[in-house]
Length: 101
Image (tube, rainbow, N blue to C red; front, side):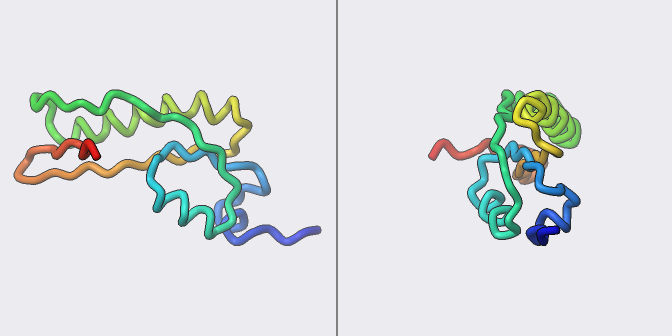
């Protein structure tokens, strides 16, 4: 029996890939260091905030929509699990949009 990579043992993936729905190079690097086989899936959803939705509801809705979008792609790729991640910056109750560059 071959030894599993550290990340595979940690997550119980047993060699199946983890679907990552994040464009963050840092997240990709961290998972690569753990030797976790990855497939990259699109969890792209409209992240626009109109200012009427409260911040907590916005974050919860965004997380839910991203996961649902990514899950279908993850199944197609044969992934064992799907990981989505996002960062939302809030200052004085206002959400700062992602920088354009």
